[in-house]
Image 1 (cartoon, rainbow, N blue to C red):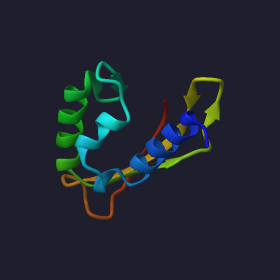
Image 2 (image 1 turned 180 degrees about the horizontal axis):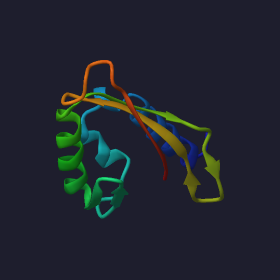
Image 3 (image 1 turned 60 degrees about the horizontal axis):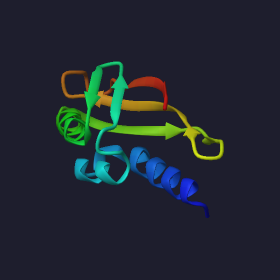
Image 4 (image 1 turned 60 degrees about the vertical axis):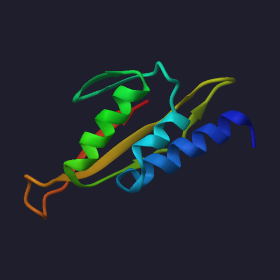
Length: 102
């Protein structure tokens, strides 16, 4: 398995079970100066990402991703996904989905 495929595999494994993953593991997935932009804001640097994920996961009942098969080029990849989550403020039977791309 190539290095890129190994990285993508770790990425997919982390996000498919996000609500049971430690935010500290993000350092193995992202560059120290990475920027994450999502519908909720922009987060610059690994420490900002870890703070964001700690806050995010502390306020949801569950959060996981269904990730479509990745697209590869020589040194890059892209994935699309659906995020499945429920928030404590929502009724227990309410679940939300959010489509995205990386």
